[in-house]
Length: 253
Length: 253
DNA sequence: CCGCTTAACCTGTCTGGACAAGTTGAAGTA
DNA sequence: TACTTCAACTTGTCCAGACAGGTTAAGCGG
Image (cartoon, rainbow over all chains, first blue to last red; front, side, top):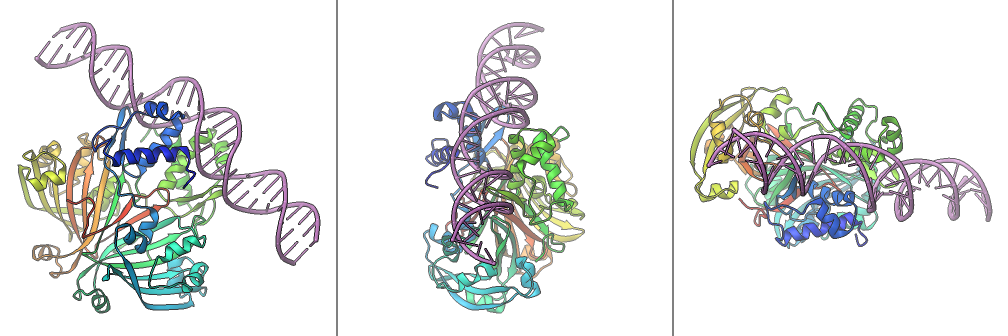
């Protein structure tokens, strides 16, 4: 991060300029030629930089015409989407947790499907109530693969980010699959979250994978409806959003 | 589409090979060098092809190591995410609609904020009940900008895809912003969808933009919780997912 | 047998050039 | 005035080559 590639530096500069309002929403970006001249790099490098902004949905491209600014993204990193704690801190909130259940066990059939791990391997089943500034916001259940389970068990599970500490230990999260729907609060969830039974909850189920494709964790998060909104931006070129029929789920688990 | 670029052809071939199981999940992709030799193209072209697969989350990359197959995406096009009808058809369902309300009016302050259009411009406010194989699945409210409103009004609004017909007329959808949360069914929604009042609904609010950055439509869709799931895949490199605090929404509307 | 070094391999970054294809506004025409 | 044509500009695609930096497995030494 400290020694970024040239194209990342250029992308960061453009992003900052957009945030500063130098290129307002609806205005056009400098042409590739101008950026080449300004930074003294080859055109390919400039195009690499701009490709990042396109993936983020910050700018729109039309062949032949200058690029248009669509808006600035509230710089959320992958980590902030992965970790409730890191997200909360970045929003200026104080996240805490109460451990409801923590159990190390041999993987059942269900566990093994969720984690893509052999039946019988050790897994950690962790259930926590997550609080935002002291107020209940989410009930979370996470299954950790053997690879990371021991490290997680050794941590203080009531404060700080598990993800962040795993990252410090050298575990890298690379990909995540999210499945989002709405469910009614059960008796236990209603009591924990301080809502009425049957209240709508936003459920996010997630599978996270390392760069090598190894599944590291599976989780089921249920948010109070008034606590969070999930935001997705997609474009014709970069699309990773899908709507699944609940009766016929493509990637069940 | 018929005259694809070389890199798109190569990407499509790799995608197909993965779907065929030629490169199973967890296996490695051929190296760039092999693909260069096989297709007789420059390395940059191969890298362009692979970049598509990376954006789709189909493969994972680590510098120095061969790329790993993460899984095949249920080939959902941008259009299928944009249009309930097109999605339903692609899933083998029959989508229909009942018009609840259709009104052409001068944009109120709220309308103008939602569509990023001047107050007083003509907008079309359309509310419909959407059915899947005859069963109520979603209540939809859409605001169309002046540019497309007249065309929409001239259509049969009970069957077929509005989006598809607008596309045929030359309107291009390029970007979309989605905000997803859970809400309780109101009295009217409950009756229309055939659920109890207070039942959880999955709400998806969307703003769609043309390649030039012009807002074409705004919509608020509320799904029966048992009808659909929204699926998102993100990676450390390509990330357009955000979690917003509901009390402090970044991009309100 | 185990651990270390190293060479082969593979992906990341960058250069410079060429031509294709779409957009836009100015100049010219009816 | 209204329309058409065209040249300048801008982005899309592709090539060939170079070097940096991470990964992996074979081979060597203890």
